[in-house]
Length: 116
Image (cartoon, rainbow, N blue to C red; front, top):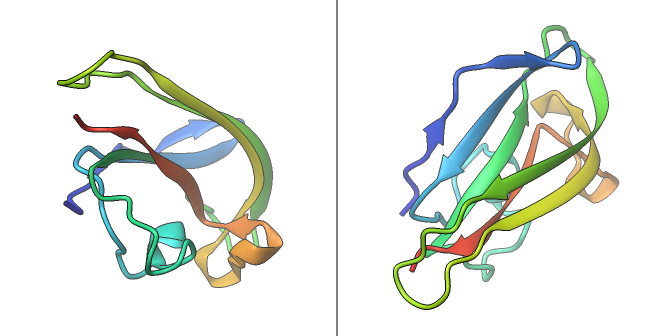
């Protein structure tokens, strides 16, 4: 657990972004937005596929209010197969200005789909 895959940076809506996927789930990774402890140390994401959207600001103080949807296609080994999608809106900012309790973060996502 904890091994992630990062996409190449891409531009959308005039801003640079990156997606991150944790196919085997993960616990907490220092310096990575919600995974750095925002959900609390007892919240387990192990065994769930995680998908995140990361904002890559090009200048200090840059932020963007964005609405987005992330979808994970289901390939569960046991039980019925299903897809998981969620929609979210938030303010993305540089890492130095993130404050998740105020709705500001550099990256956002969830561990939503059981691996098996």
